[in-house]
Image (cartoon, rainbow, N blue to C red; front, side, top):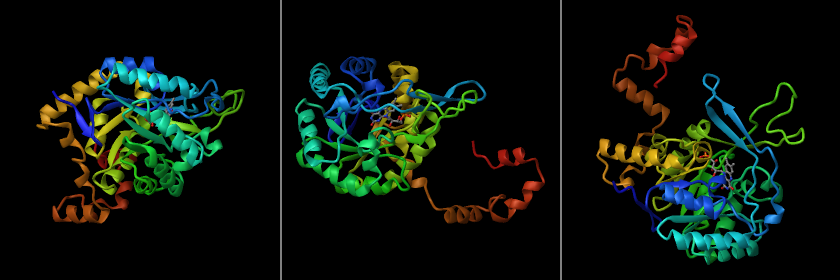
Length: 366
Ligand SMILES: Cc1cc2nc3c(=O)[nH]c(=O)nc-3n(C[C@H](O)[C@H](O)[C@H](O)COP(=O)(O)O)c2cc1C
């Protein structure tokens, strides 16, 4: 089945992209992902001066299910790429030469000066990459240099910096949003005012993954200390879905959305698409399952389309958005439908009549 989709004039063989991070951290891993069947990739974020990027070990932490030890949440305190820009430029060229039909998106980040952003944009663009993703969203480490989410948390900066990039770029520009704000629409619309062609959402959610009860040290612990990091994997999916739905409902139609956050299976990806994403990105899922996970993503999407009678991926995008409403409307609709539980029939007093767990189950939809 044809899983291709055209977004901002770029034809993606399928909507599945590696999210920026370890899965796209050099030309060799990018090639492996394309060979495995990924439609595209957002490479690890690059900047002009890699010598300023120094990572720590350990830098990851996991939250496991109490029942079966499955990883449900993942935290990182990793920075952007620590590889020199000259090496990256050569690798971008090489990857585009070897995989002309696969989509390569360069993620870029710089300090708050117009010259630096425009210099980086121009040199990366010259390599032949298909689009840019502006990293306004890394929530830790880089913020100490006023980079990353320091920009995404301030809509005026988001607009200004997007404008700088758009002044010199001839390829589509996506702005990647931080979820560590009150209203995702504000910085997103600021990026659109600056000229962004698409919005990628979300980057990681600020978190502290846990505290070691033997040592009393918060984790991940580096020489006895830590910093809050970025939370990802399946636990963040509902938050990411909410933010993508707000963008689906609130952005101008021509602005594309790339959905990110906790996608591990085809059904997760389809949910993001139903809420307005025309591509999806996966980072932690690939770190935990490997690039082969794209087989299930493709098979699951094709099966869903056959079962539901969709003939193109584009038809799925935003299909569930009309089903958001207001609380008042929900109550009104229940009353009109004369549902047993509407209004009077489910008052808070009833909680005393049954066991609390039973009552919770009764009010749960899935
Ligand atoms: C170890 C790690 C490193 C990451 N590095 C970057 C990065 O360099 N640039 C960026 O834009 N996002 C980075 N991210 C964020 C991811 O691209 C993604 O937005 C986030 O993890 C949520 O998606 P996921 O649940 O599929 O991982 C990183 C995430 C992880 C887990």
